[in-house]
Amino acid sequence: MSGVDDYHPFLESPRRDAERHPMDTRRAELDRGDAAVESRPVVLSPGGHADDLHLDIAREVEQRLRFDSSIPPSRHGRTECDVHRRGSGQTGADRRVGTGLDGHSARLEKAEDSRRQAEGGVGVVEVGEVRHLGGGASVPGGKPQAASGTGADGAGGAQGYCGVDRLHAVVQQVERPDIERSARQVNPGRGGSLKAHAGIIMRDHAGPGSTGSRPSRMSRAVRRQIGQLIVAGFDGRTIPVELAALAREFDLGGVIFFARNIDAPLQVAELAYAAKQLAREMPPWVSVDQEGGRVQRLRAPCTEWPPAATLGRCGDPELAEDFARALARELRALGITLDYTPVLDVATNPSNPVIGDRAMSSDAARAGKLGAIVLRALQEEGIAACGKHFPGHGDTSVDSHEDLPVVEQERPRLDEVELPPFRAAIDAEVAMLMTAHVRYPAIDEEQPATLSKAIVTDLLRAELGFEGLVATDDMEMGAIARHRDVAEASVEALRAGCDLLLLCGADAATQVAVIERLIHAVENEELSVRQVERALGRQRRAKERFLAAAAGWRPPAARQLNALLGCDAHQAVAERMREFADE
Image (cartoon, rainbow, N blue to C red; front, side):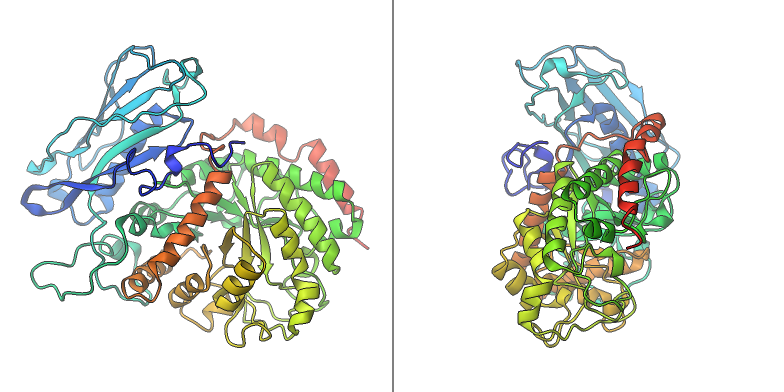
């Protein structure tokens, strides 16, 4: 796996990498000023294919025109982009790709030559400006900007995919309607459909008739990444157009798969691949709850794992490691990059309706030891692990999916029982911890952990020294949604110190309302820009750590998936675990 210090341009912030990828600049106005157009660098993941770059440009511009109401139908025309590839050692002719835009074709011209870069370099793709040419509108052309990079593959690293080299780093320049101007005054409450909101949230409100709302304190770089703070759920077995539109407008931290999204293994892999194409500057997490037992979204032909309590009853570190490695290999084959496991709660309440055998043990030391083994093995196999539910959900008698539980234990008891597994996970360098929608009056008399600065910032960050990502449990669960507006609670969670908001429902309006409210909160200084920047920074570091090595991943062939998922070796591990299921 690549180290975090390896240079991957697609993971670099525009601020940190300003010389290589200049900040966005407005280039021109469409005829009569109907919409602003800007030039934006978009970076293809390392290992990506140049042919995919062609298709991605056509698809992205087509969808952009389709959903952006700022460009009237009369302005929709064909999209043209010149792509010059160097270092291929081949020559080629023009190709036609893409689908019609309002009755016109999308044409990409690819001019190739046989020039080679210096030894040790990789191919360079120069992407010309995309121009909206229909309906009398035009954008001044410009000289393509070269995107250079170096990589380990060298000139001999070409692999065949339609005769195009695999590239380690490719920078696109795409002109698109400007959505990065000052934010309008938005309704902080729940909104209507995504199509009604997404196209106007970021539109300029200055000018004649403006109410003169407060100038934005949010930088353009932060504004365009605000969606990185969200992991979104959705309905169906393909990426909905509403979610794709949200990702284009605001970026997206990740997606989460549930049973409603899953059919056959190849479909899951293709869905994961489609989700990864939503990336703008940072790739999204493709995540799932795959614990074993009653919480596992992937069923046969994947290996169906017994509950985690079987590992605790066995107490064998080797079995725990074998389980985690087998689990990780199946997830990785399907394109999943983040698993919300292990459960680090200590099962001290037999009447707990939501944890039970999801916890590894009723003994804090054993739960911590085995949890650390599981998360370390997952992460060594390339899957980011998320331990949960901080600071402990094991001693509750209310299901937080339905309402807000309260743990009445005093702080010394929390230090002795609930917190040790999380300390062990932090020592094992867990990538992410998930907060509990549970109130702990001994630490914070009013707020549940997810919304509590005393718990997230003071306890988890300052006292326990955790520097990784803090994710919320699903913000649409009853423990939050029955008592607060989800969008308001999302602002509170970030203010408390969380970095990632899980919105696991499929309601696009809720997802947009949360983004609207976050923007509004920053504009009105309810949420500091610094807080948002810190969350984005932690997100970037985690993604550099886990997603860079898998950036060129593609869905395996069906026969490869069938050979791995539920294979004899993995079934043997599951059978060893089942021996401890009935104790």
